[in-house]
Image (cartoon, rainbow, N blue to C red; front, side, top):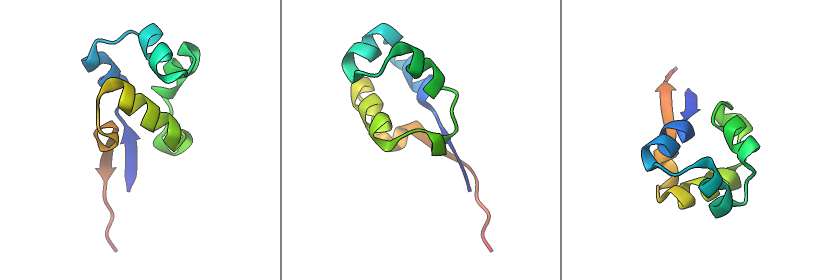
Length: 71
């Protein structure tokens, strides 16, 4: 199963600037830009929690499963 993050989309939908998101999460803007492009397995769970909370979203709203392979 491939899991992707929808952080970039969630930030754009919220209308919150990276500067404001940095203030709300304590995560530097440069890293927030990087996080938007990282694979899901390279982002720390506590970062996802901080971002979701700052955007007023549930954590599961920031994930999307792309493919399922059942054996």
